[in-house]
Length: 195
Image (cartoon, rainbow, N blue to C red; front, side):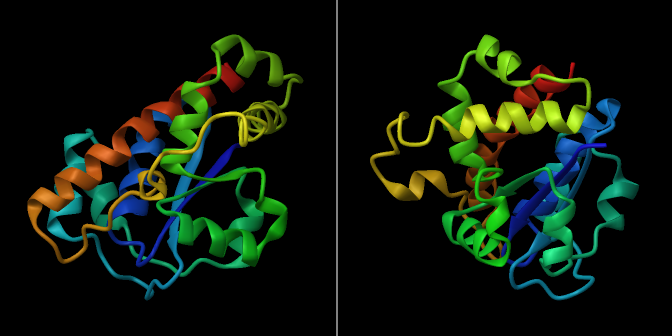
């Protein structure tokens, strides 16, 4: 079983939204998507705005309401095959907590950028073997190998998804607009790797 872990600050807006959507889209492949926060308090619920965004992706209400925030730990990282941070500081914290995750931890927007520069054929070629987790690891190695070859964004902030917590509905919409292409890229890469 493939495990994707999404990470943000409080684990109530960006990372649970990403995990819920990825679980909805990739559950048919046996993928499990969960989330955590680098400064989360246990059990906090998603704000109404984030819950509405999740519902807009077709995530069932009971799954949205079941979310309770949790703090990022080494144990959670150990289980993860792919770790998607919502910004560069989160990714830095992930790699400091577990340096072995260096090549499988990306900001979701970095993942999108690297995936866009990688052909379907290259992803499939990297996905050798019969075990789905090994196949995904191979695909992620192909993407990680693009670091340094694909130009970084002109503004480093373009690798971050804005934190909408406590802000306007417009900010939630902007955050979602930054997140959505990354979710599409993750779905594409995982399906190419394991199908």
